[in-house]
Image (cartoon, rainbow, N blue to C red; front, side, top):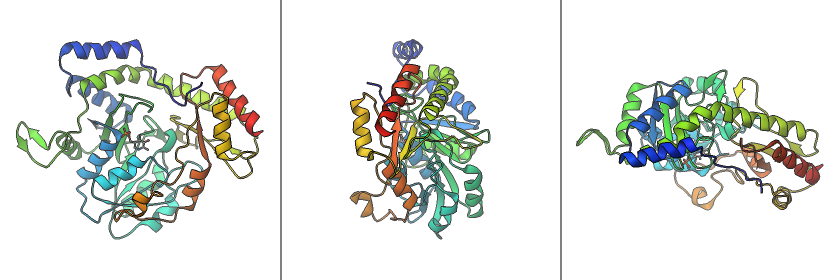
Length: 365
Ligand SMILES: *Cc1c(COP(=O)(O)O)cnc(C)c1O
């Protein structure tokens, strides 16, 4: 079986974790601080604040903006449920702009329809490892005085015109077990705003600035040194890891050319794609339905994933939620019905890639 994702912790990660275990200091300390320093450097941000998950990174980002009840956040309907849950957890109202077919991210042309007098935040999602069109989204945010929170959970190190995601607005990253960089569970907020960074540091630690000096009602959103120890060696190898993902994506694109009803993903000009997922689309011209295709891949021993089978609010719990605005998002609905992600991770051998190509061709060509 070729899995859709694989965690390959090196012996160096294991050794660092053992070192932390022997030190007797397991909670947030010097190793987390080192991780923050290096992640800020990697994303070209002045500050990085480690937190307990990608979800809490987004919640803390929104809370740090001090939103009021009724304030609206415009986000993407083609995303993991955490994006939406974070908005609701922060007490805001979720509104959706449609996405573009080329990059699966918020289409700048569709933001206008989602804007209203209560819109406070624009929250694009950098899906599958590719940056959203921040060069077009930032001017819209500036014009309407919106804060920008980037859901960069899938896109560590992705760039647009050389500038890393998470450095445009406030960046929220995840280090969950399947992400490009992992601590099992973990997250990071990046920002160039020193005051905001300070507020985030206080928010994640019970609202406490100094010992027993509480300046706001906070949380325990801390990451631990034990978790951070796992990821430091991964940072050393990350550029090579991304190159391997890019090479795998290029080989898949080459091998899957010209199949009726199959659309392969593209890195758009100017975007440094980190290929968290390699996501194809099955259009109505395809020989098989998506369900049949997924079944055929499983029989051929190839793991795959459907990210995501429906637009994020298309579940009764959200359709009936007073702080979710059900919006007209036809492109996102169509893409959600067509997407399938194939393995692209760096542990794939060239034989694995050939096997994936052969199986897809056999099923669809
Ligand atoms: C993984 C993910 C999150 C949430 O991250 P967790 O670390 O699992 O809380 C948020 N948004 C997107 C797009 C994700 O893929």
